Image (cartoon, rainbow, N blue to C red; front, side, top):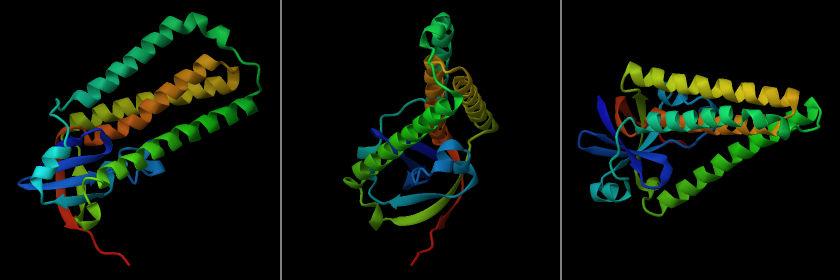
Length: 220
């Protein structure tokens, strides 16, 4: 069945799903490590949603309407600007050379990788605390939703951005390890952040599909 997706105001972790007359809050975050780096897992595995009966509250926490294709356009625009700047600044690359061995460069890449992930997990926790001040999700009925891309086109657009960002991240950091250049390192950081942000394209604002909703089994 079709489902309308709305963003939660100033909160990247959650989405509001409208399925018929029912409203659900989708929690994108466990934001586990593997979902950040492989966003298609959001489509493959079930996701936790919370049924919200207070529709007025839902209207208060949702963001203003935006075009459904804005997520893809925004990422394409940012990626295009990044690639353009890279080409324009390429003649200056040699001024960013660093005198360090490949082993040290590998450690630098690993540290930056961990720092960026830690930053996103921190934002994730802040977003959770922010929403819980307005909605007590612990009192809501939990369900599992199998959500699919709205169309084949949406799937391939997301796949294209994912492979592009993944490839540019890997190539940039591999070049940094070999040639020790700060500019190349920065390019890798830029596209790695884009790679993580692509996870939001799996639940972009607009229309999507929910195969079915199933009440989540109680644990403990």
